[in-house]
Image 1 (spheres, rainbow over the protein chains, first blue to last red):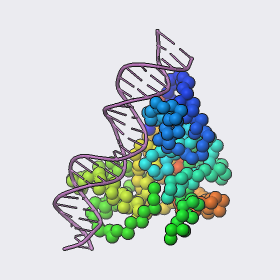
Image 2: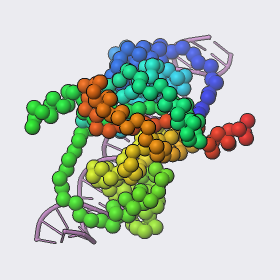
Image 3: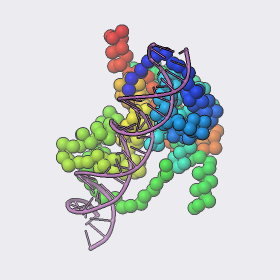
Image 4: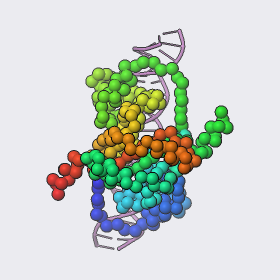
Length: 139
Length: 139
DNA sequence: GTCCGTGCAAAAGCTTTGCAGCCTT
DNA sequence: AAGGCTGCAAAGCTTTTGCACGGAC
């Protein structure tokens, strides 16, 4: 739990570049295992350790964010624009909600609490349309 | 990832009652290991499995909530009133922010997205006053 | 030539689970 | 008496790490 600012010089690696490509090209909020599966065809010898190490690097560079969705495994995204998450309790899907509704929320909290706010997240839990329909049909 | 509604009849257990007592009596958002340590003096044979099992039961009953703080381990709380969390990136402390600022936020999302909102969380990340002071002194 | 990144495998950590016996109902 | 609850230990899973080698600079 530390704001590590390693200043080690970075070298290019195809694995890391493709990892970022994939994250930027999807809106599915993949897990590390997912990303591993998606990269495996391109890098047959890829190892999960590499995926995790590169995710850590990209997170430190601020290009990727880790999402704690309540599951046992983490999900990741590369979206840089502010947005909220709609997390389905039934199937685990995470849907992005693009419209930013409270632009000044961090300032408000900073002013009211003795705490330096550097970021925030707003997540909504509930049932996605797919699961809602499925429940109706089953009952 | 399923809304399990087990209708198994519950029996009383001193371990579970005391676990809830402790959670209700603290504002430190303890981990499962913390709770285990706090209960151990009272139940010398207590096992971590029991702590986890009872946390699961209490969560299903809606009396306890799991907090995903970005750490490797989960934290728990028994506070029922709506509130936000200020999570310190440096020391991991979670501070409750009691003033509810957006009472109608769930309705707004429900109306704008095809998603049935049942709950939400708002978390702020940053630096707590303690770590801020420590940083000033070290630099 | 450095030394960062990778693959592989082992380790680490938190959480879950099988089982036999105890305790609540 | 029935069956949930517990303690104990083993297993499970995601994530991290040590090491030697290959690749980027």
